[in-house]
Amino acid sequence: MPEAAAAASGEELTLARSPRPRQIAEASPGTSSTSSSKSTRSSRSIRVGRDTRRSADAGRGATQASAGILARYIEGHIEALLQLGVSSLALYDEFVARVSADARQPIEYERSGSLHVARNEAAAMELTIAARRFAHAGVAHELMPPHEAQRLEPALSPRIISALLMPEHGYVRATELTSALLTAAIQQGAEMIVGSVEEISSGKGTCFVQSSAGRLESDAVVVAAGSWSGRVPPLTPPVRPVRGQLLHLHFEKRPLSRVVWGTDCYLVPWRDGSVLVAVSNAPDGFQLVCRS
Image 1 (spheres, rainbow, N blue to C red):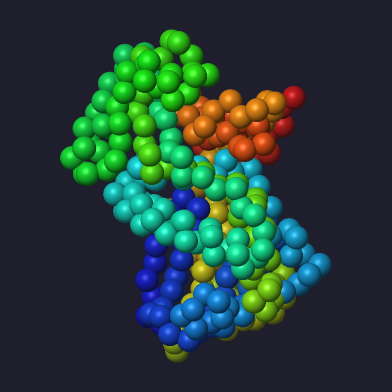
Image 2: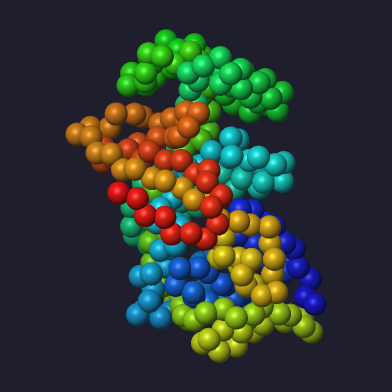
């Protein structure tokens, strides 16, 4: 088998060889697309295939419903995931700027921080414990009384009793980022081969992707199928679907200046006055739930 390193989170599994000019195959959800690419170590020399009939469908899986929060210090529930998220977040400023420039498309992206609020003593104690942990780790944060939080965000409820500010956090509009990534890839000569991935295998230093569009050979395979990753034989990464609920509110002007987290949900304020009210905590499996 080819030399490989694997990293897994709740959304993707990546298999990659050591850096050198290589061919990469990628399996993604939503459009059931498979992309074959040849690249050097420079991201600007990527060559991936394109099917213009279906390229607009890219990122139309769970990505289109993502709130786009970049809050690694809160969402890194295990050490390995925390370190992966923190390292990724450190690259985001340059990454988003480069993608936006290559695609010639704006991407709404802010690192204005996140404010975590407590409305009862139990939640306040959790924030205090988190602040101690961040202080020990040298992570920038500020634990504040309610009047300080309301000075930052006047729209907050007067019933909050404490708040924790994480200034390194932020958000990105996921659909804009995905669209720009696709455009930038196409402008670099990208192609998208559309088909259902049936099996991934390897042998004699080469990886193989068998799909309904044919067989692809590559030096590495990136599985980016989200919670469907475990359904790509023979892989069984420890991922599972979690149902989220998302409500869009619209205001004449932006009511908040940063992401705000509560005990039961979180709020993401966009520049156009939209506010996303979101919660993602229902492990319902692969179900379609419709409610009016």
